[in-house]
Length: 276
Image (tube, rainbow, N blue to C red; front, side, top):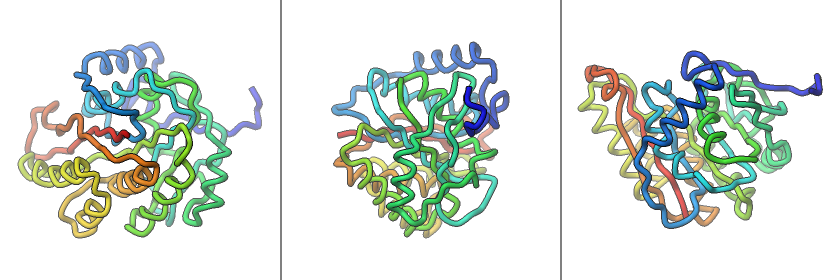
């Protein structure tokens, strides 16, 4: 191995999901096999997926990723929020690969560099990548459903409407004619009673079903609903529109209380797919 290669190492293996490769592969395969698969009338170009520990949101994530089986993509773009660091703009990982217990995923350096050239809010930086889990937890599912892809990992430090639109427009322009999949990493409302969470999360679901990025952004900015990766979701929806995608289906939603049995303070999870 070239010692000069820069590899982003796992930050939450052994916490959010198993660190042992065999145990992890068995868990992911079991989750993918256990979900009910619906028919999608077209090729999937976008996924909205949760990023909690697999014990809580693994089945929800699997409900979307299971629909990718048999599809092929050259580049997978994962857009995530930043939970641990605040910075302005969007951070594109400057290294060569993301490591996982299931192997390395090479960074698409060509697409990264082109995006940086075309979008002035995107910079090559490790800001937001080091300890961030929201990209990392998507990778075992991606590695278990599609093969041979390279990764464009993007972390949004600031999720303003203007930044979401700018990033979405740049991605849509860059990827319009490419074999690319866009993944928005987001959980929904946090730490409300289940009945309150359901009201808040329904707003997100309805806007996704209508494929209404602008409406969702307005609701997020007003505080009428919550999603920790709401900005990434909006940016991905804007990009998908420009790529000719015109349908999005919510395939599964739940909250942490469905697993823990505690409905007094829950986190919402959702999986959706966009296709044309």
